[in-house]
Structure formats: C-alpha cells, structure tokens
Length: 494
Image (tube, rainbow, N blue to C red; front, side):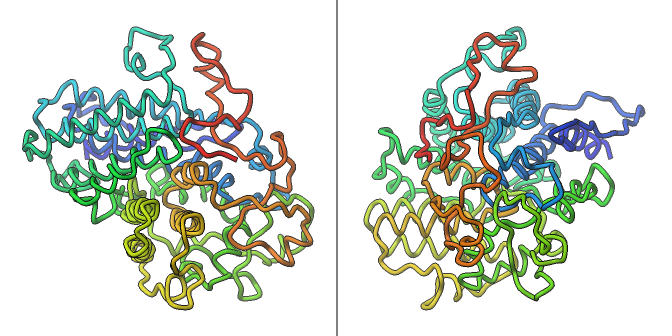
C-alpha cells in the first residue's frame, strides 16, 4: 500500500489541467508510514509519471489536434484556441518533466551505486525525458537545470544537448555491454520491464536508435553508422510501456483518457478528425473498429479539422467517436513498431528495398498485434492500401510516415507530433473549401485548419512556446518564441 501511495502522489498530482484552470487531485496520506522512501523506490513513480505526462492533457489533446487525430465538436469551445494554433506552452508537461521526472531520476542516480541496475535505468529514463523535453521545446536549460541553487539556469542549444545525450547513452551502453551493471532491480517496483536488466539493455539500444535517427535532416546524420548499429545490437521485442493493469476505477487513479472522460471530453467535446479517418477508410484498415465507433449510418466518419460552422450531422450521429471502451490502455514509452519503422526508414535511405519492406511490414504487424489484430492484408498485402512495392525514397518515406501516424493514435501522440515535423508527412493539402473536402477528401493528407489560424496559411505548429507561468517571465535567459512556428534544429518543418 505504501508503494501505491507513493506512485500516485508522484505521478498523478497534476493530471487534470485544462486551458482555463488546474485541479490538483486529492491524494490521501497514511500517517502510519514515513513520507521519505529509499531512492530506488522512486522508480515506479518516475515511470508512471513519464507515461502520464506523455499521454495527458498537453499531448493527448493539444498534440492530438495538431496531429489531426481529433477536432472540436460544434457547439463546444474547449479546443478552439488549439485548433487556431494560438500559443500553447504545455506548462503541465514542462513542470512534470523538470520538477518531477528529471529531479527524481537525478535523486535515484545520486543515491544509487553507480554500478547498480538502478543507476543504469535511472540514467536511461533521464535521457528519455530529456529527449522529449528537447523535441518539444528545442533550446532549454540543461547543464544548469538540476542545480537547486540556480533559479535562472542558462538555456542550452538543442543540438548541443542532443550531442551530450548521445554521448551519455553511448557510455551507458558500453558499460552495460561490459557487464558493469548489477542485475539487482526489484521486479515489484519496475512497472515497465519487471526488473529485467536484459530488457533495459535493449531499451538503451532502442533509445540510442531514436536519438540518432531523429537527426535525419541534419549534417550529423550518419546512416552508415545506424546500419552498423542495427546489425550488431538487440532492440526491444516488447513495448516499453506502462501497463493498463496498474490503473484503477477510482477517480485520480484511472487511465488518462478515462479520467478526462469523467468530464465528457471524448463523448461530448471532441470528434475524430476526417484527416485520420478518411485515410484509414480508404483502405478498410482493420484498426478502424478498435479506434472508433461507427456513426448512425453504420460507417466510420470523421469531422473536418477546425470546422466550426453548424452541422446538423454533428448533433445527430453523423460522425464516429473514439472507442475508449474497446482499446488497450497501456502507455508506451518506446514501442516495438516505432523501432521497426525507424529501421525501415534507415534501410530505405540506404537503398535496401528488401530490408526496408521487411521492417515496414514488421512495424505494421507489431502495431496490429498491440491492438489485438493480426490480419494485415488490407494494409500491406497484395491489394493493401499501404503496400510496399519498390516505392523509392520519397514514396517510401511517405508510406512509413503515414503508417507511423496511424499507429501512434492513442498511444504515442508526442512521437506522432515530432515525426510529422521531422518528415513533413502527412503532407498538407492545398484544398481549403469545406464542400470539396467533404465530397472528395485527399486521403493520406492533412488540411489547413478551417477554424482560421494565427499562423500564416499553411504553417503548422512546430513547437510550443515556453511556459508563461514560472519560466519565461522569471528567467532572463529565456528568450520567448514569437509563436509556435519556431523550428527545432532537427525539424524539416512546414
């Protein structure tokens, strides 16, 4: 019972953030137990907190809108600001990353034997969190960020942070391969891999692969080195995820989407975006049935992104809904399909079509397996809507990217946002007329939000601004962004 109280007090304290208010959850404390615990016992809380941060408000809904997974239902206003690409600062995520996971992983490192499995996993998780911080905001405090005596840390360049993260993970992997870390993790407090140091070693390789591959648009990208790395190392064979088994039916202990559905966000506020649904419908994708419910016409239908005009269909069941009751409720930190998609792209860039096809199909199969499905015929089979048929570099990149986009729905919204900004896929359609879009939607593309945008037409969000509360106004080293179209160094962008 002590452990569960610790986990939830660490991970769920800032769940219910809306754009207009914050609600801190009530957490009961049993005074029979001490409030301080061994640093190693922080592990579960760090893991759950990281997962929750990546699939709660900022990434679940805001990134969900940017990814064109969701759009605002007519008559509601919660996400109109998000639809118009007005400035968002992702303040809850920033706070949770910096004052939660980064501080706590550092505490684990500082209080663990440097040759223990706990130190190894703590540093891996810290690098994982830093990757998400940099991929979200770009330049951030890094070298001075965890100095408790420095309230105005300098902002480091994102590209410099990436170089250091890669150097750090190289060191960890080298020491792991040399057998320098003890296999001593208590399986009861490791919610991701049940204390398996071997699985964490594969996680390390998978995280390095992600970091190196994210640089595909930069001069530091080395495809030959990545091919060698893939050929000589083992990668995750099961998702590194927060299992659905930890959630409870009690308020404040639910799966994030279920918690928000207590406020009817899915049933009354948002609808599936036509951008995603139309692409899946174009090939009768088997995941439609687990992602969405059918409308009153027994079909899958999404709503035009950012279309705020009155539409009777919006109120009479013309659109599908997100199928919360029918989906698994795990939260992947890194997924097997993600790793396979990266490998497919790396082989594609090396002009190895056979290997690219192999890993592309493995990626789709892994995602189907996650959803309890197995038949990929409609996707990658001979007549599949996304089959691989010697596509060449650019078409191959589009195929991989579109299937990433589909696969990350309700599991990895942050990654979907990062990857669209890295690859430029799904591409942005130049069609802006609602009638034309309704009658002949360009399946496999996203559209300019019909809500109107504070950004120039055709410019999509690339990174949120720095938090206006607690960061930008208080730190003179913070140069606030003018809008959300500021690129991060690895992005291809709009």
